[in-house]
Every structure is written in C-alpha cells, then in structure tokens.
Length: 202
Image (cartoon, rainbow, N blue to C red; front, top):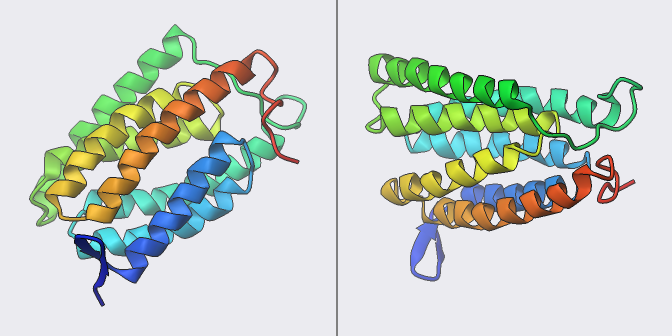
C-alpha cells in the first residue's frame, strides 16, 4: 500500500528499509559489529523493494550482502592474525588495482547477464553499481578504509538511478549515504593509525 510522505509516495517496506539502512551505516562508522545484523535485515527488506521495481541486479546484490554480512560480522570480531577485533587498514597499490579490475570485470559480467536474462531497462547502470557495491562491501568486511571511497562514488550514482526509477525515498537515502560515507572516511582515517580501536563500541 502506498504511503505518502511530503510530496512523494513510498511504501511501508521502503520506509522500514530506509530506517534500517541509515542505522546500519551509522553503526559501520562507529565500527560496531551489530551493524552486520541490521545489514542482514535491511538487505532482505530492500531485496523485496528492488524486485518490485525490476532492479534485479540490486535485488540479487541484497542476497550477496546477506551472505557477506555473516562473513563481515565474523571478520570484525575475530579477523586479524591474533583472532582479535579487526583493525582499520589501507590497501596497497596491488590491492587497489585488484579492486578496480574486480569492479570492471563484475560490471561486464553483470551487465551482460541483465541484458540477456532479465527485462530490466537499466542493465548497464544496474550492473556497474551492483559490481561497485560488491567491491565496497568486501572492502568493508575487511575494514579497508578504501571502502568509503567506493561507497561515495556508488552512492552518488545510485541517487540518479533511483530518481529515474521513482524510488524517491531510496534516492534520499543514498544522498544521506554520501554524507555518511564522507563522515565514515574521515572517522576511519583518524582511527587507522590507532589500530582501528578508538571508535569501536564494546
């Protein structure tokens, strides 16, 4: 059922997903491992939202997010060599190139799949942003500071895509995500030299 907020319509499911997603990113910035629990729930609810909008790449991405969230949850708690909490670190040059190549390869594969096997009207945009989101999520699971760079790029482009798809609340959400990603980048940059512990919640 439609739900009218200000000058646009949404649904209760999209509104719930919005709230859970904002809470997830806020907890990511704070380096709380509970962010992964909310990520699992919000990914499930957004998967249903995207299915209804024929954004099949984004829908499938939510299923991947759920899987990666279990991995990320473990990594944040027990992921370093001493099985202690994972510290914030940066990628070396080889890691950055690997991330870029993975994004490009994922884009080519996903765009082809979406064009060939679905009725989406935005296969290239959906494929590019889905691939970028996968890279960002994997970097986040390992507490690599570059995850925020990826999310800033992806979230800006997602705003345009969701406006095109008339998902106004989700477009607003991703505009909020851009600001939160900038905050996260600044917070983690100041925390990386301290071993990634200063902002962590017990």
